[in-house]
Length: 101
Image 1 (tube, rainbow, N blue to C red):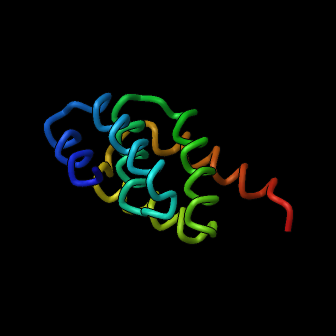
Image 2 (spheres, rainbow, N blue to C red):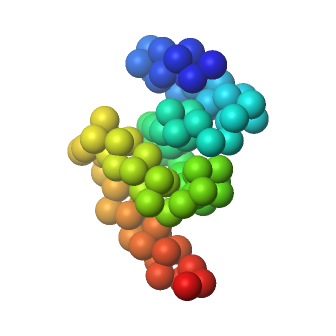
Image 3 (spheres, rainbow, N blue to C red):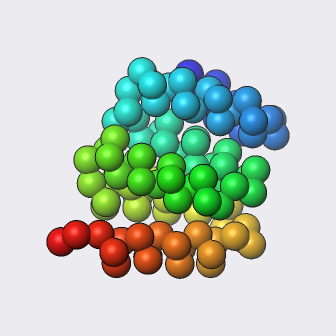
């Protein structure tokens, strides 16, 4: 399913890719490639707030903030000039700053 999600992203069908990535995560919440596909599809759909929620889900599924941040950095590498990055990064930083220690 993850390979299909990436194929859908490359074909520009981000709605289908999102559904496929979610199905893959239903099967394995610890699949970092599925989290990356979900984050990428959401970014390309312009759904910044949903990306924050997906980042939280990645933290939970992958078991750490560092692993979720690695996924996010891979997505950024694929989409370096996306105009939403500054807003997304600020929201994630605020989320992390508010997290219990």
